[in-house]
Length: 468
Image 1 (spheres, helix red, strand yellow):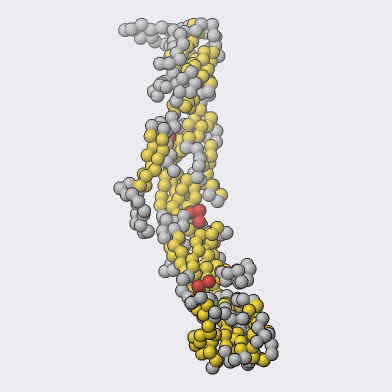
Image 2: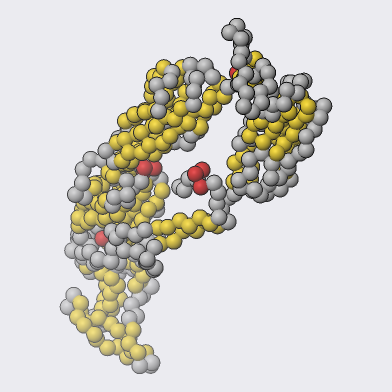
């Protein structure tokens, strides 16, 4: 059994609610097509309201715009507005039964408007940014509705950074701002930031979502100088020309200054972009050059060592023309000249860099035929005196001596014993590299300074280590 009760009055008529099984619920024989609508501000709208009931006096629409009077003997009425501009409109379709009772359905309509302008700026700052400093970007969105459907999206280039949503319920257009904190580094120099206002209006809304994007904001990042990878040691033959590379990058571009411990050779500088080169002609002696690059954010210096490789035949060894005994002095005739003997030994390779526990093999050769034999002296891999040879090889299968200094020697027939030491660098990569925060655990707080520590265990040689 159903009982009619009257809950309120609409258009001067009581609104029907049906009581069934003790629970009151709306039972209105009306259907809206479409059931809900999303409309752009100023666009037209048209919605049909139909009924399956034949036992009614008439039906119609009540609305601030597009309302109709009571239309008798119809089963469909249409609500139409050519230019919808009422932000709070709530159209209602109603039907009146023959006994004067009335029920209604409210049509859900969302009126939206894309922003007039979206712009991006840096708060409380102008000009270049400094690496490692925090800055706040602001996105200003003018005259957009509804606010609860707005999503502000941040981008660096094409990379998404952050999304901002709003819980405020507002049907009318508003101005709104969103912010983003950034801490740029040198790789961000020239980066472009954008913000985008997007209206997510649900499945009934337009697809893709209506969006308006700001013009890009390009940033300039200033940072202290940093050397580009390059050799710290350069080997050159005596009398040759050499170019030393002191390439560095920084913003503003750093100034460069060369100093050295000798006036040897003629030098001039060339600069092409980041490349900074010192060209030296006719080098004859070992030298160390200091390269210093400076801008307003910092100054760094590195040393470049020039090693002059003198060919073996240019290493003279002076020997007396007659043997001397203790307590005697040999006097040469005024016309006599010392005998110059070419240095008889050559190493191949001339120096080695070996990983700890790896094998190593170096040949020592001579062009002299006037000798009693040759060999290697070393804590590991040494050889006895080998006769009738012009090559002896120093070999170690598992090199573990950090201070080893292998020496190749030759016994000349006149009793002299020239020798040459092989430069060996034995290196070992670290067992472990780890990073930690000193004197702190847990989350960090924005704007607070913290100290990170990199621990490197069991590495050698230390003078060749670069921690990045």
